[in-house]
Length: 266
Length: 296
Image (cartoon, rainbow over the protein chains, first blue to last red):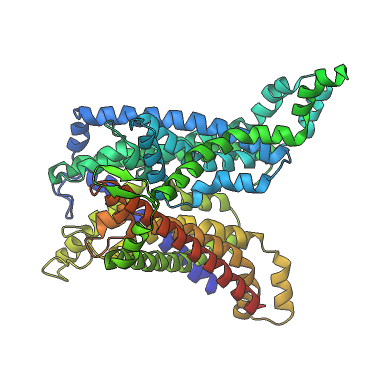
């Protein structure tokens, strides 16, 4: 009886979790300028409109640029940090690790305004670079967490064997360690890219004249006539995030089966 | 002597502690430069004052006096605390049964459940709030559906642009984040403790209250902290669904760094918020410890 009630609760909960965002794709195909029920009919007009929105295309390219730079740099930082945490003991290890993970538990607005003040105070201009710096700061904890679980997952004797067989530390890392943690690296790249692609709060403060996609959407929300276009764009964004995350999860799981270690993104 | 000098530097780098530290240092320096230094600057700014276009760098407590004396800031901070507190309470209460279900009643495809729970968290935050606006709005899903089936004749205007809408939207947004730590702590519980409790005559409810719940408290605590901190600093949700009655302290901070262009006052508000958040989070920790002590 209790079991059944819990199952029912779980199903209801998942519906509650997913239902709100599913309205976006639903309305994106609705043939009406008013985003509301009842549905009027099927159309691809809103998606077609997006093809001619040149400012949106620019925002898209900006987001791609910020996203890839963020993903690559924060994953590189994450690889170093995860390696240090899993393999070595060093001075103040716990405090330093906690400090690197700190952006995870700070109100984002604090992170955003402190960066803003320093960048402007030092006389730099706000640009895509400032957004990227902010995003790296926010994504390093995630890439580190993902990579720690994959560095933990492999047998260190493999590295020792490689060293015994005469490889140097660098070649050992390239030929033994790297292939083993490659799935973790891919999944870290995808996750950090997705976070950057969707991030709004920090980007809002640190964007100069070149908007990223969420900033562009925010600007469009003021125009009621543009609402259906925004809904279509939002649906595309949701779908892309979903696909990227599924790939990240699949890669991670394949690796888990290989190393036999259970773990999760967080 | 000359031999040890020649190999001194490489030897230094071969030492475990040095290597670990060297590997950690890029991330550490990055966070130091882009997080610790900026926060230090913000704290410094909060003791300066805005003098029209210039910033007066004489140290003063004037901003803090303004923060504590003008009622508007107190009202906003209090409201932020109420909203963040309600959101924390709601998410933890609603997330616990689901985490419990996945930890104890799902035997296959646990990872899939966890993945499905986390997906919405990774999708665009702005779009999720926007979706709620579409649902609760004047011409939104709720109103148009209720009118369609004839339950109401006029759209209800009290469901959007107030504090409740903010609480609902934020709870929905942070739910996945609350489930994970609770799930992890439930998953870690040694199942033999539960069997022992049953063998010693505890019914399911007593067993839950005396074994499962106390052992999962660290997860509950982590969930509380992880939800409370970001929600108190949110300004997008209040701006999109909060109306004027739902605005929070972060909106005021944003205004000071934007339109009002009074960075020192904004900095003082930010520091006050940080201190408040830290105090409340510490309060959570002590509360959980007290609760844990009582349950045993």
